[in-house]
Length: 172
Image (cartoon, rainbow, N blue to C red; front, side, top):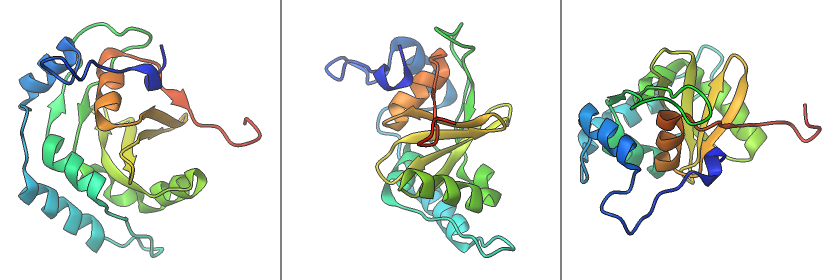
C-alpha cells in the first residue's frame, strides 16, 4: 500500500482509522476543532517574514484551514508501522519559517506553491502543503509525497505507510 492509497471510510463514524483517530484525540484534536485566531497569527507571521535573499512564503486557504484544525498539536504514532516506522508529528507552521526558498523551489518543480505545515517530531523532516491540500515532506534524503490531503498524510505518517519519493522527469 502506498501513501496515495491510504484512505478511510468517509461513511464511518470517524474520518480517520481508529488508531489515528485515537492518537489525534490524545493530542487534543476533536471533530470541529477550529482555532482560526491562531491560524491567522501563523499566516501573518509567515507573510511578514522575508529571508535575507528576499524569499517569502505564500499563504493560501488550504494552509490556514489545516492550521485551524490541527495546528499546535504534537501527535504521537499509535503503534508499530505497516511498512516503515511511524512518525510522530508536530503541526506548527513556524517550524518552517526559514524555509521559504526551499518550499518555493520545490513548489516550482511541482508547478504549485507550498506553505509550511510542521515537522516530524524529531525535526528531521519538514512538512508542507500546497494550495490543493496535498502534503509533502522535505528531509536530507529528498522530497516526498505524503498524500492528497492532510488526512491522508497524517494517516501515512502515524501508521508507517511508505511515502512516495518525488523524482525529476529523468528519474534521478
